[in-house]
Length: 309
Image (cartoon, rainbow, N blue to C red; front, side):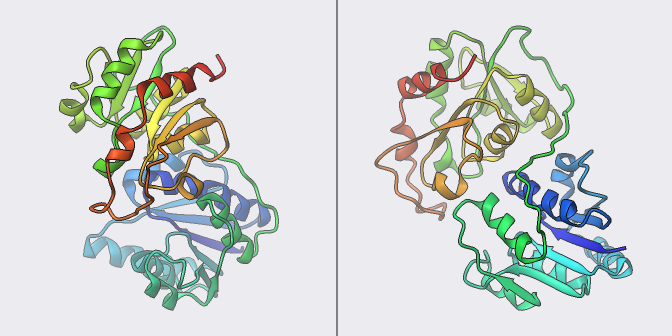
C-alpha cells in the first residue's frame, strides 16, 4: 500500500487552509494510506475526515518526539509532504525516511533552512495559501485537485440564543489584528439580531468588556458548532474567520496589517473590510493597530446587511 505522510502541525487557520490539498492527495491516490502529523490542540479539526486515515499527535516532549520518530519510521512512507515550512515540521517529515520528501522552496518556506531536509522543493506561483498548498501537492503527484473543506459537526458547549444570531470572534494572536472591543459594544447595540461573542474560557474577562453581547466560552468543538448555527459571522484574521469561510458562512472579515489576498477568507462568502491606510506587515511589533480602528461600525453593519438571510 502506498503510504503518504502530511505534516501540518498548526495553527487553526493554516490547518483549515491545508484541507483541500490533503483531500487532493488522497483523492489522487485513493488506495493509499494517508497519515497527518498535527498538534493535539488542532486534531479535532480532522475528526471524521474521510481523506485522513490516521492522525498522529505531535508534542514537544522529548519522550513523545522520540516515540513519534519511531512510529514514522515503522510506517515506511513512500511520500512525505511538509505543508508548514518550518525547521521543526521539516525535521518531522525527514524523520519518516520517506522515499520522497516534498516542501516549499527555500525562498518561500517560513524558515528557509527547512528546505535542506527535502528531497524535492517546489516554488509556487499562487498568492493565497490554499492555492499554494494545492500547487505543492500537485508537484508531489496529486492529479485531481479538490477545493473541499471536510470539517466535523462540532459539539454544543455553553448556551446560545434560540433565535438567529450573529457570531463575533474578536480575538487574534496579535493585538494589532483585533478590532477594538468598544466597536463590538456599539455593534451589539445597533444590530437587529443578538450578538454572540466567542472565545476560550480564559478570555472571559476580555469578552465581558463587550456590553450588550452574549458571551459564549468554548473550546474548538464548541466554536465549530456555534459557527454552523450562526446567521452570520464577524471576525478578524484568525482561525475562526477561516473556519467560517470553510463552512461557507456569510459575514464580515476585518483586516489590518495582514494581506487578505494571501491570508484572507477563502471562497468568497465573507465580505473583507480593510482600511485604505493599512500597511501590510507580518511583524507583530511593527504592525499598526490604527488600521483596525479605522474600520467603522457603520461599514460592518452595511456589509452585514448585504449578507443573504
